[in-house]
Image (cartoon, rainbow, N blue to C red; front, side):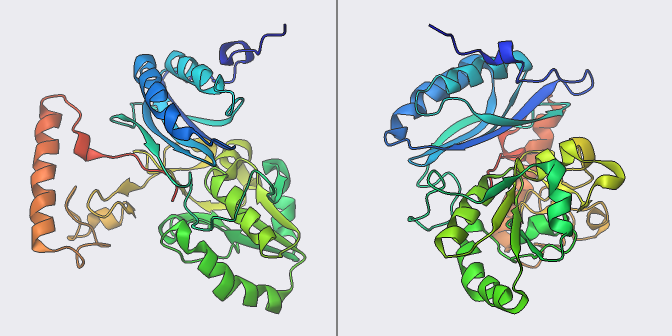
Length: 331
C-alpha cells in the first residue's frame, strides 16, 4: 500500500529565516463536512499539543484558518489536519514573523467558513477559472478585462491592483448587494470580455466567482493563491500591486516578498492606521484613532483606557496580554 507523504517528506512547510523564526500559514478548503462539529474538540487538542496558535473555522462547506508556530509544530498539526478523510491534502500560503502573532488557539464552528450569506452558492461544485500569479498581469492589462477587488473597503484603502473596482463593502456579506446594484449595471455599460477577481488568500474569490457564475456571468477568473501568493511570486518592476496588503494577524499589513508593512492597528476600532495617522492627536494607542475618535462613547473610551493600562502593565512584567490583539479571519 502506498503511504501518503507527510508534510516533512514533501517539504511543504518552509524553513524560516533566522531573523523571523515563527512560521505563519494561511489555509482553506471548500469540501463537504456534514459532521464538522465532531472535529472541533480533537483539532483543538491537537493544536494545543503541537504548540500552534491561531484560528480554525469549521463549517459544513469546509475549513478556513490562519495558524502560527515553529516549523516542527506546524508540521505536526498540519499532518494531523490532512489525515481527516474529508479534508485531505491542503494548499498553504506561508510567511514568517519575529514573534508569535497570536495569543491563543481557537477552533470555531460557523455556518460558513467565509460569510457571503447566499446558501445556494457551492464552491465545491463550480468556481471561476484560476489564474496563476505569473499570468495575472497579462489578464488585468487586457483592456477588455474588468478587475474587481472582492475585499472590504478598509483593506482596499491601503493597497490594491491598478484600476481595480472597489465594491465599497464593510463586510463580505454585502458583496451580493454590490453585484446587484453596481456590478450588473457596470457590466452592461462596459461589456468587458473578462471579469478578473482577487482577494487576500483566495477564499473570498472562490465564493464570489461561484456566485457570479450562478448569477449568469461568464468568463470569470480569479487570482490563484490571492494577493499573498502574488506578492510572494511577483516583485520589483514586474509587480502591478500598489501599496500594502492587509493581513488578519498582528502584522496588520505586508508588502513585496511578504515583508512586514508599515501599518499598525487601532485596537479600539480594529482598522489599519498609517504612520501619518499615528501622528494625529486623535491617536491614543489602544484607545482611539482618527477613524474612530468621533464614534466612541465616553464609556467605550473609559473601557479601552483601562484595557490599555492592563496591556502596558503586562508588557512591563514580560507577559502577553490577551486583549492586546485578537486574531481575525477574512469576513
